[in-house]
Length: 73
Length: 256
Ligand SMILES: Cc1ncc(C[n+]2csc(CCOP(=O)(O)OP(=O)(O)O)c2C)c(N)n1
Ligand code: SF4
Ligand code: SF4
Ligand code: SF4
Ligand SMILES: [Mg+2]
Image 1 (cartoon, rainbow over the protein chains, first blue to last red):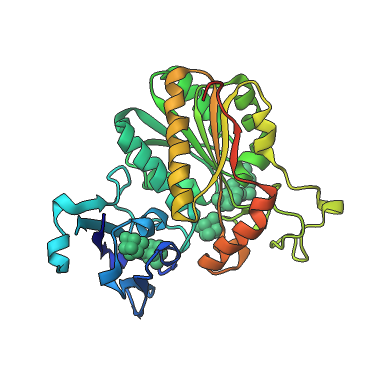
Image 2: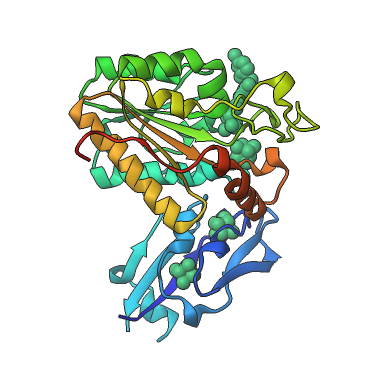
């Protein structure tokens, strides 16, 4: 079964730790060159088409930044 | 398929649990405390026990845990969380009571409370966050600090000749008859975080059986104290901490 997924990223809550990026099987996410109000390079999707909505990123994010959606395709 | 097609309530697979408050946690970027808080909150949500769970926070970086759990919390004096948890559980035996402590709190100043609470077999859940250092106070050596590990008070590395050996307190606890379930987990990969959640769920479910302490050590990081960037700290954890603190169950109830 194949899935397509995507994230809603709470940019202001993100601390730019990059821990979530180590859990993504498809290298969909990376830190932005831009910073949030606290000065952290926040997370962004760089390869949204490859996201399968597995929530690996979300379950290791220490700050509850990520909401994950997924559909069967 | 566009983003808008995917972001619909019926397609939601993961969201921040409402058992955490909206407060932004004060923890350093990448700190395991945040993940461990979230896992506990998710377990409380999934078990439907938010209204009858009481948390005991320690002294240490997680001293402010009560700001983050949307459940009743008490903050204990340094090292005394298991003593407070004992009192609360005895007064409210039908409530779910858990203590949450760092290694300095649980295995240094609170060693007495830890050992005796486990030995008495209080019917509580104890969460032990072992990052091998006193994070809150600036990264001093803890009893759990690894041999050779550099900290603010062992700048040339822990010399066990002078400073003693790292204390594997979870192994000691597993030997006590009052300890019903003892396990060591980690949360730095998705698979480990999911496994840790199962263990914490088990540790809470066990309170229904009234058989003694359920003790979950989580080997965690302290990026600031270890002076490593978060991802590097997790690699260091895997390479070094797990040698001395191997993951797995140390004591499982019979028949499980
Ligand atoms: C009675 C007393 N002694 C010492 C301290 C200083 N102190 C605060 S937190 C701490 C150790 C915290 O380390 P740990 O429990 O490992 O928590 P972490 O911050 O690493 O999560 C110490 C020694 C204190 N607050 N009170
Ligand atoms: S949901 Fe899975 S595939 Fe999508 S960004 Fe997160 S880890 Fe990567
Ligand atoms: S793990 Fe969370 S806080 Fe860290 S970069 Fe990813 S989204 Fe941001
Ligand atoms: S000092 Fe260490 S334990 Fe404390 S919040 Fe920072 S990384 Fe976490
Ligand atoms: Mg510590």
